[in-house]
Amino acid sequence: MKQHDIFGNITLEQHPQFENKFVDPNKYYGSDLNKFVAQRGKKDMMVMNIDLIINDYKTKTIRIIESKHTNEKMGLGQQLLLQELSSKGINTYVVSGEYPYKESVVYSFQTKKAKKMNNEQLIKFLNNK
Image (cartoon, rainbow, N blue to C red):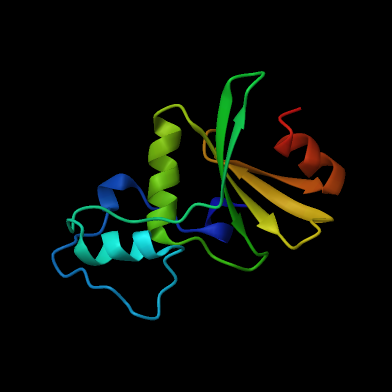
């Protein structure tokens, strides 16, 4: 899977300007707090809903994973946030697939590569093995 299959090749230098930011009442914000910050917070930041943070106590590894349906595209804000977190040394990924994940694709922001996985491989990945 190429990077543009999930999202476009956007860099932080191409980050959108925020002077005309508005809140779409039909947009999904993930929580009331996310919506509140988007409405009332300063306009030079983005508010994101990220699906999964895994803290592996044994390996002391934190991974952040966004989940997308097979044909679902990643929003610009999520892409920029995950790129930024990856640049700070945090392992960030996108898992694309459908429950029960017999087949999925895992994209790594660190390697900028995608890997197809079956159910067993995905479970090993999620279990950090």
